[in-house]
Image: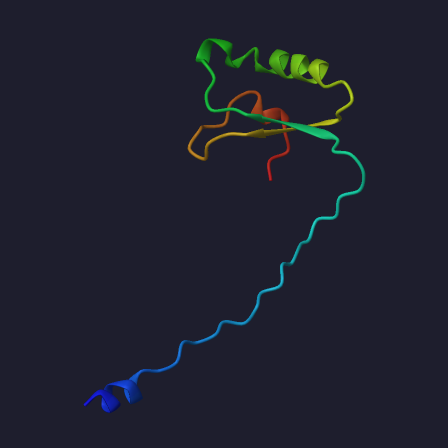
Length: 85
């Protein structure tokens, strides 16, 4: 009886390896800093660009800022100044 069961079991299917379409290459030091923004008070939303200028003053050797926000956060004034990808 066990021989019938073992003969009906198929071997697992092996998926082909997937090569990434984009492999980043890094040359030299990082030229950015990151801000993880979870929320911003409505009363300060219009001043958020001032906050960003101050952030760049803290990192004068950086040219870029990466801002991450939760997916469900509606677009606000600060995000409208960025390229979103």
